[in-house]
Length: 283
Image (tube, rainbow, N blue to C red):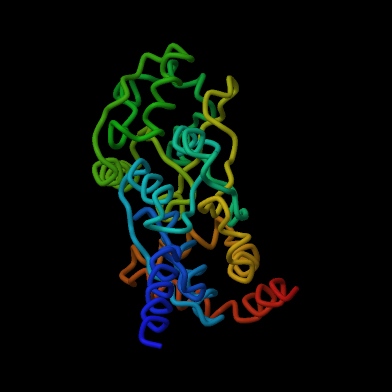
């Protein structure tokens, strides 16, 4: 009998050791970028999953490469990402080991923007007014995809303006200062962003199509996630956060709220919508 018990215990131990790292189907390891467009998406999806009884652990990343490495290794199970533009290289490199779960928002775009009072409406009008802009386009961090695209625009339109590398904070301060003084300024900007809500700005038309069209945000996961977690997949697939709502939540954060508070306010104001999302997953 003792020999049989030892054999059963050994078999049980082997079985447990072979279980996947995320065997608890009611726990979801979620990854997110610590960026203003993705943190609201992640916060709302986390709330929906938690309301259905899931425990959601969130890991924030600051670089796409690290985030995709964590997803492919299994450190996180799901990640919100723009796979067609901002993180396209990482998606293409890893997509054989990943899956697209569902779209969660749409409308991400970027370009060159000016205050609305500036009588310039298209990128190809910048050269005629280069002096009024101080011969500069105020940019952000040099490694950003937006900077790469703006550099392509400078070359594609043969602009007589220099793209100035800097930081998001520096660009924001320069834009605020110019708007306060009603001065001319051209900046790199994106939507959804609280800045587009805070400041009365307009994106310049791009007749040559240098900048990409509006992009979609997706929840992506390790290959097999949807099959292994069908209920969680249906919950996630029911969530869709409009771009304007993302912008508004970030505006609330800029005005002093925490992101958790902004998400909680959004959830409280959209109770009926969340109920409809829950009904979608009932299959």
